[in-house]
Length: 203
Image 1 (cartoon, helix red, strand yellow):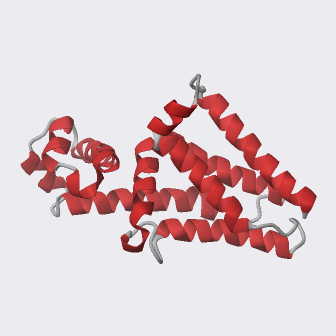
Image 2 (cartoon, one colour):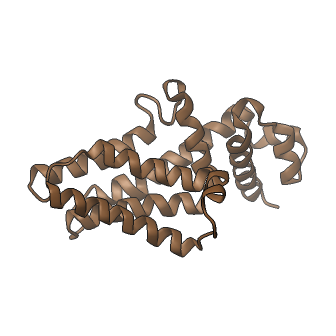
């Protein structure tokens, strides 16, 4: 296995362990064991050990979300404001679908947001949310969307996505029959659009 491949496997396994057990309880030895290397070898890839692994995972989450959502849709796309918002939400859904451990980690980080480098004040996840809210409010100011509570809408979107992907136990207890990934995405996108159209109808 190349150094680059080992590094990526360490990051993926660390994300799984952090999501499942939290930072303090995650074991560097267990991470190394599941990758198939000795714990001491982790330090040749991440000299600061667990702290560096965690920081790089959070940096990956924030940079991916920023690129996929804030940068991509923070410019003129040629779509209606409604379609841009739906696509923003769908892009966030796809990210969580591809990286359920990251969704769980995001969910876990919200429990102590004041001390979180990801979702705390000035954190990159908060910047992504602010960019999305800013887009909607700018569209409202241009009369492309009616006035509605953007923060309440954003809270619903984020809560639904992170709970669905980041808390599989909740999902399995609520659903009588598991949804396919395609159906789950379709349901989510339809609900987002219905919420937006309901807000526009009453605006």
